[in-house]
Image 1 (cartoon, rainbow, N blue to C red):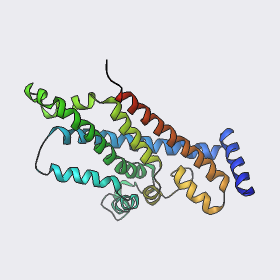
Image 2 (cartoon, one colour; image 1 turned 120 degrees about the horizontal axis):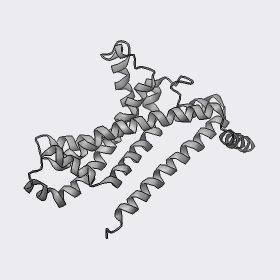
Image 3 (spheres, helix red, strand yellow; image 1 turned 90 degrees about the vertical axis):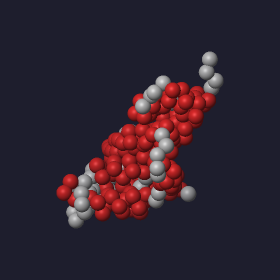
Length: 234
């Protein structure tokens, strides 16, 4: 217990004095995860709206796949991406392995189904209410997708926050394709795992406190947006 107390005190001190290693790791984590969440959002939100506004052969199977991917094991994503970008893989010439770019792709692949599923859920309710009117007006598929997305700003922000929360807490996939290289691909989650194994509990706890704080902020923001969206419109 004394050891934990000392480690916690050192961790808090590192945060308060903005320890250089801690700040660098947190900064890289935020850059990678925000980029991955944006990538998942840009691809997933239109996909969700498309599934809500259209009917086509294979749509049901695609919906099942999107929802099934919500539980996709991160290590599977890491393995597939590793095989693709490794030196002998089909994308090996791009030199992505053990780079932040590969980590962004891995996290983005995990974020995309979250955004698509949440966007579809929101878009489906809107389409049930306004779809007939849009069809009568002769609105095409592309414009219908844009209209659905424009009608749901709060749910879409919530979807982005959920994607970011998923990305920043990820460890397995980015460890496989990022390599946990100090000063280059070492994020909060991979650093916590490494420093704990090394016995450096102060840095691990410091990063853990920052990660938990970010997770709570994201959850609070998503909850607040949902509360606002649920308020009756005047």
